[in-house]
Length: 126
Image (cartoon, rainbow, N blue to C red; front, side, top):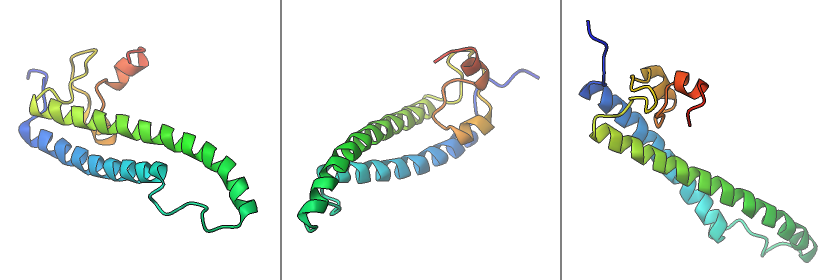
């Protein structure tokens, strides 16, 4: 029997469902981070004492930097998931870009935006 070269349409639909679920959660988290950065989440220090406000402003600066990093990471994750959906449409989803072999379904269920097999990652491909 020949080695399988792509996932079936049924399998691709399973992966699409996984990706869409993760995409929804990622978008929700990104929106929350964005609201936090824009100060529209109602979590500020306007209604606290002046002393506490001064202490909070320093922490807020660090917190905003961290929130910005988290938002950027989340946006990258969203784009990777969207790219995975394009690969599903093109029927190239799950094919390792380094080896050309199928990435095991177990890996794709855990990391649905993966473009490299574990073997390729261990060999230093990025």
